[in-house]
Length: 147
Length: 147
DNA sequence: AGGAAAAAGTTGTCCGGACAAGGAATGCTC
DNA sequence: GAGCATTCCTTGTCCGGACAACTTTTTCCT
Image 1 (tube, each protein chain N blue to C red):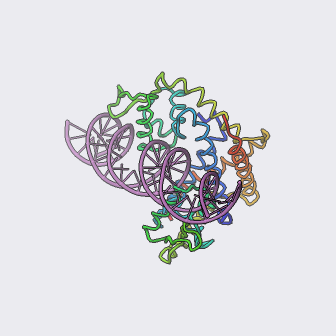
Image 2 (image 1 turned 90 degrees about the vertical axis):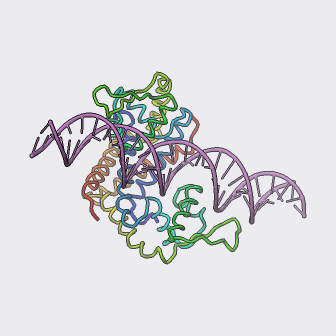
Image 3 (image 1 turned 180 degrees about the horizontal axis):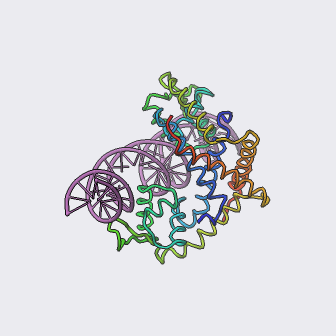
């Protein structure tokens, strides 16, 4: 089973473990994996349109719309019409979300710490480089479709 | 945004691209990412219980149950009670699924080819090693929970 | 043997991710 | 300025993934 597509299997398994770890680290903040990315983007870059969140997080419009609806229902985020473009919606983090910021940042710190484990700094850089190489390949593959 | 948790972000992005690529490669076989893994396991290891599929694929029981229900509805898989354990269900690929095998294997070949890109064999081994290191860390983190 | 614990599946619910389709507003082009 | 394409967002649908709760059966332990 692991014989077919070793790289792909490795990516697959690593991703699954990673996602499960995020989920567990976010558990006590009440967020699901993905939601914390939205909040982090809002905290860091301020109020912005949904399409900006979509492009910066790499999600897609329907997913983002529903995700924001849930965050809105939880009171963590507010929607406001754009004053300059009546199609657009401006999303911003509410003050009620602020207490979560420390938790989320701690969770991401832990995530990185656990992911990196006991690796030395150079080894870590090496791995980052490896992932960047894969990412480049996959991005290239994205456009060169057909089969 | 990319400043926080570079490793985690890299894993995240790579995984998303990878999954999207699988989805596209499987498109014309009519399968969704994940379903092909079930079929591959059945083709390779023969009829088996759902729990065996769960452990070998790393999924979980509810997901597997519903995934198999869909494959069953599509006629690609059949359920049969276990003769030795009345709790268990034996799952097997149907003859109707056989024509898909070549497509699925081709898709996985393409996936691996595109993921590896133009990397040299040693470089590829290096990256595999890097992913294995991350996987080991994440597996270790899985058990050492608490925070 | 008997009863508790564990295992195998199912169903309910919620979430993110993806595709299709469509409405509303904007921008562009002729 | 009129018409068409594009952009932004929403809704419907389907899927995989995860957690909880439950039923049925098996296993284990006393």
